Image (cartoon, rainbow, N blue to C red; front, top):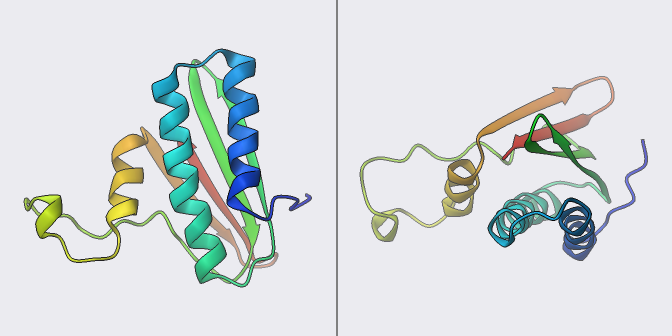
Length: 124
């Protein structure tokens, strides 16, 4: 597996190509951008990874997004517990992950200790 994406712009270019190829709605493409922005920024900021692999596909009418990267175990999709308070009253930190979890139909995280491989799977 090649980890050829190294910046947020790389992710945006992949999303743009995917959206054009599949003639997806602007809303879905916007959600893909938001999710990728939050997750890629987190993994580049909080891990020692130097690159990642982004794969987007259409399966059974759903968009499936995979982000893979080599680093220590780091699960950027675990959002902080959200009480019944408004976003304005929440403490700083984790708000982007609350957004990711609200936009995704399903999120999975796996870590392969032998390879130090982190895999995030998101279904929209």
